Length: 212
Image (cartoon, rainbow, N blue to C red; front, side):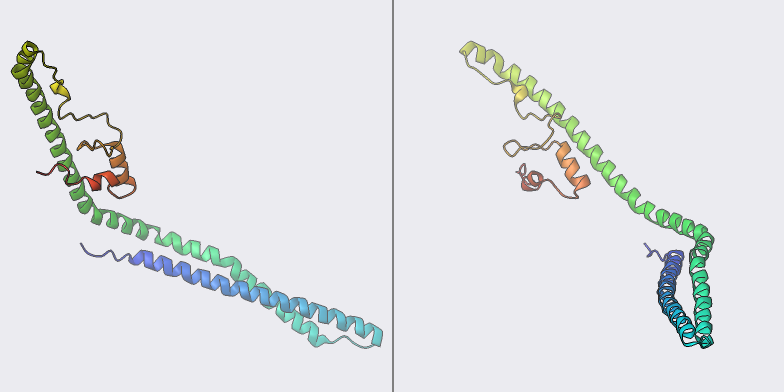
């Protein structure tokens, strides 16, 4: 399977990264200009107060410099206010490309998951067919056991177990027990495999339990 390129995703992520960097720079510049503006406003105010006390003209250069900083601050704040609008506009243009790539990605993975689903289904069918085989053999065993040993046991006064309890499997088991591990698939095993991505401890421990 070919590697997914995701060109549109890369392009959009690059756009967002650039937008974040640009916003950070503008925010930093706004903060710096605001500090300069505050300092210059104080300098203008101090100069104005001094000009009154000293009976002289205020320093026009300070006022001009303050106005320049104010104009630059307004310009940078405007650019900062437009960042999100510009990014949103560009993202709108990319929505169709992202949707197309998402569909391509999903389609590319479909065959792989279809194979897993097929394998799981075949294992499930084999498991259920083996349960059917077990039930038939267990019933036949119990019938044969009764026919073979019930009369002679009664005549001899022997006590015998119910053969239906021999080699018993129960679909009502909710979890595996160490003292009675069963080949029946239990909910706890299902949960551990599906949610925790692992075999249950007792399952792994008893993987060879029934081998001859």
